[in-house]
Amino acid sequence: MKSRCFALSITLSLVLFTLAPVWSQAPQPQVAPPVVREIPPLPPRTGFIPPAVDLSHLQYTTGRGKPIAQPPASFDWRNPGAPYTGSMISPVKDQGVCGACYSFASLGSFESKILIDGSALFNLSENHAKECYFTDPNCGGGNNYQMACIFSQNGTQLESCNPYIASNTVCNTVCPYQQTLLDWCIISPGAVPTNMVLKNYIQNNGPVYTTLYVGSGPGDPWYDEFAAYDGSYGLSTTYGGTVNHAVLIVGWDDNQSYDTGHDSTIDGTGCWIVKNSWGTGWGGTCGFGAESGYFYMRYANADIGQWSSFLDGWQSYDTNGGLLYFDEAGWGNIAWGFSSTTCWALCRYAVTSDVKATAIEFWTNDQTTDVDVYLHNGFTTSTGTLGTLLTSSLNHSFSEAGYHSVSITPTDIGPSSNPEAVAVIKVTNSSYASPIPADWGNGSPPLETNRCYISPSGATGVWAETSNHVTYPSDLGVRIRTTTPPSPVERWEQY
Picture 1 (tube, rainbow, N blue to C red):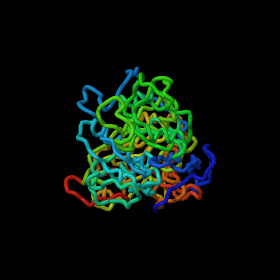
Picture 2 (cartoon, rainbow, N blue to C red; picture 1 turned 90 degrees about the vertical axis):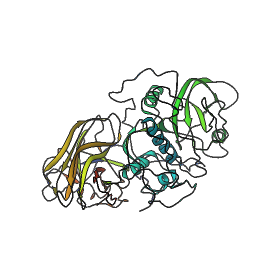
Picture 3 (cartoon, rainbow, N blue to C red; picture 1 turned 135 degrees about the horizontal axis):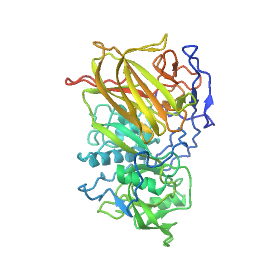
Picture 4 (cartoon, rainbow, N blue to C red; picture 1 turned 180 degrees about the vertical axis):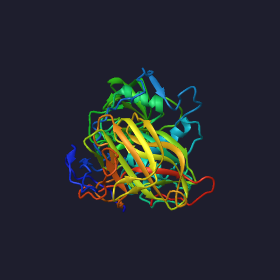
């Protein structure tokens, strides 16, 4: 189904609901319901729509194990210095009148991460990114959560095969995929992190996808100033509103001045260096090179820094690989739990081709103190009993919420060995008591039957299905990544 899903609930608190348990002894789970989103009309050449999730619990710091260092006064991934040679930023592109900034900023982050990791420059397809997510956002706007989903389910395509069109188009599935996302990390929710936090993430992990408010459209003084910007000064505004534009922060300069309202008065110093997607005829070079298309933005102004994230792990697309998943829309708008920071979840797959399971992948909505993953060869729905344990990987933790992949010992699954494969995760959050994100809790994606379950303990008989809830029916994002070495097989995704 191609439709944008909007939340209807008006509360952000955890509410207890009645879910018919599969077994009488199964405790009643809780759900964190959808978030009300006020989405004003998107002005031209923007396109960011905030995710429909409540992440106000996130402590947007640099994360456990990542000590906060004193950043330098300036830093720029276009000229990072040793050990890097040359710019780690791909060329500036132009989204045109289409509201697809979310795809440009997301792929700009991906292209930079590939360069930082020592690979070649790739020009990846924003057309594929904007047109192939489950709800088909195209020019109508989207966000980085959707992009993490499509890049993990499938991968990226090349611009040369699927060139950008600044209008709504049909998903192109013919072009070969190039890279697949494995780990994607959230820095901040709908709040602005400190300058120190953002600087550390940028310097230690690469350019950061972020958002800001650029005004309500032509005639709005802030939008008009932004649209006419030439790169000669630092932007600053007294206007505010819901963030509506996604961009890529590539660095910062503590000594760069900014001019609030562009009245030729220096009002202070300290600016981000930001890559836009409005072409090289807009903006300026902002301190390095000859390519325009960049802007200086005053720290913590226009809400820049909200909904920030970065790409942490990827692999070259595996032509012999696949992904078993039920959450077509990825992380949608709800989360499951049992009023505890610990929750178990599973998804059971009927595997019709002989493959090897290589990783279990999932979404997290908080910093985690412990994550354990298991692969079993079955799950008896009549008794809530897991089959034989095939392999496991224990004692993981993640400093950021997001999408994560945990490698497991390559294990045969399929008709010749284990025709049913059950991916199980145990997640312990740092603070949030609904640890299992799910796709859209309104049944809009196709719902599975007897496939996705949660449990407070993982014990036999203490599991509850998530797709049969009367108000928030949903599938879980507990996935199995597979490969078929060495012979290529037909791509497949879901059973």
